[in-house]
Length: 213
Ligand code: AMP
View 1: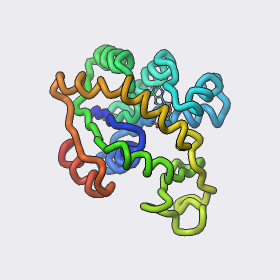
View 2: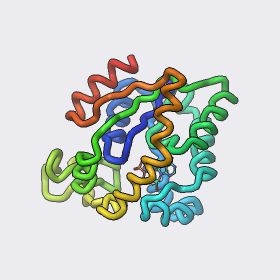
View 3: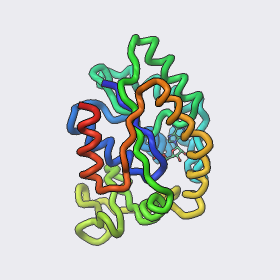
């Protein structure tokens, strides 16, 4: 099963991706996590990507397409995978279709997590992330149990640089212009399934589970 998760920043894609891949046993590929890891390790891709991430802009298509092409050929993708944060432009979507066609595969379902703008801003400005294991919290809706520490690994939680107010608005503009057109693109292919992401993570998950089963 090959699934794509689409949605604006703060729609809860990452949380749903983790829950779903754990449940159905397919590989979770988060482009944002891959890029943040590359930045932290100062790899050549990380050095190139850093400024884009900090400004809330998209990393060039050539970079993310190459990353995806390499990643989906790995053995852990043989039984299926879920793409979280890719594609984000029409060019990426077309490249993905080609990459999959080369292997005689195709996307089974695209899940679009829809959330109103006001809610997204509140979610992102209150989001806390663990740089060590990627766990995500929220100061109001899902606070860590002890102080500012990750419940899972004890790591010190941070607010992502691109979760600051000025950068959030850039990320939104980018989403509206570049990523939103993918909704119609996949709808026209009969692959799009829309879910209301403004509810609790558990309720959204219940619906997504039914959609992909
Ligand atoms: P995310 O964690 O999905 O919100 O992604 C964080 C940042 O990584 C984005 O704001 C972009 O700078 C970069 N990024 C993630 N996915 C892509 C993509 N498919 N194409 C270009 N840039 C991306």
